[in-house]
Amino acid sequence: MPTTLGRAIHAQVLVWLQAGDPTIAQAIHSTQTSPISLSGLVGKRRKHGTQPDDEFYFRISLLDGDLLQPLLAGIDSWGTKPISLGNFPFVCRGVEALPGGHRQVQMGDYRLLEKTSPVSDDIFLEFQSPTAFKQGKRTIQPFPLPELVFGSLLRRWNAFAPEDLHFPQIEWQGMVSAFDLKTQVLRLEGGPQIGSVGWVRYRFPDAGQAHIASILAQYAFFAGVGYKTTMGMGQVQPALTT
Image (cartoon, rainbow, N blue to C red; front, side, top):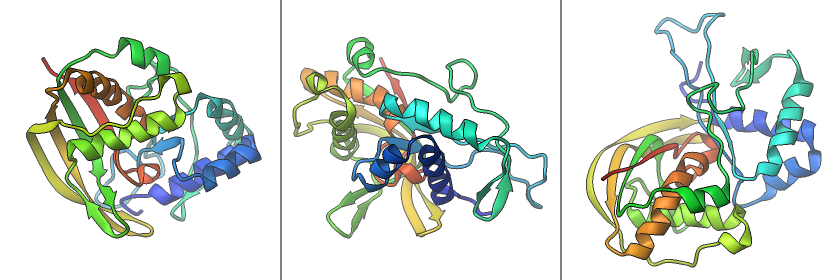
């Protein structure tokens, strides 16, 4: 089995959405800013090959709440038919959609995030899968600079949050105060992708930027950061430090 199945997972999720609502699935396929973020396949891989009873999961994060019903309807209509990821057959044993059922299941609301996110000028992000950013047409930046990370999150927030919650464009003045990163290759079906994994601590001396960055840091768990977040890249776990 391939080490990563990002493209196959993305294709399967679109198939489920297509079954639930063909119009929504087509709109997602053609949009430049995707309202979904996907993890890779998570689970223990044996050295001598996957066994029939091995269990794996992947996380589907929806940035538009209107997608939940058609997604669940599409999964339900699929029933117990096997799904094929990278020519390997899997059976979907269940879906965890409510917080508390699985550690990776969380539920948020744009207004709730905007009002209740704790504010700090010191923000810690853990990059759990390779994270990288496109700069120009051909350049890929694997280091998660503050303007790239929070610029990416701000664009996604403004794309899907209610209009009255949109943030203004910002020239970020944050800085990296500490980090422990390494580059890692994610071998997607379309070719290898290089990104950073590890953690970074950011500091924002401007109070207004610190407030917005604190909200976006909590949003990062849902949205992912950087490019190819629909293929398993840019998965982030936030924490505010004191």
